[in-house]
Length: 97
Image 1 (cartoon, rainbow, N blue to C red):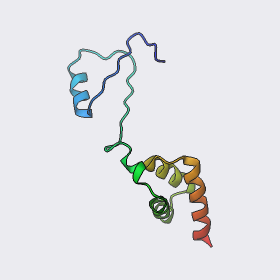
Image 2 (cartoon, rainbow, N blue to C red):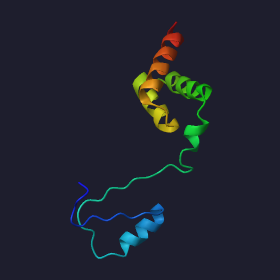
Image 3 (cartoon, rainbow, N blue to C red):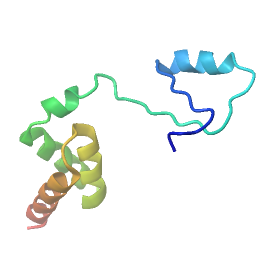
């Protein structure tokens, strides 16, 4: 729905945006907030196979499901969810054996 009549895009830090919105009389329509992780894609670039396995192992040991662990690690690292899920499945099988 990019053709809304009152569409507006604001960029800035959360405190800056909060100040700008507070100063208005009213906000029209819906509001969507997108938040980027601090440092951008630095975590994705630093995510080696070893760190991905370490993160998965830690989550699985804490009782997190394979699905939830792989979703979390994929989100943290920027790796594909399907790739991380396959690795989490293999790791879970090896931990059970």
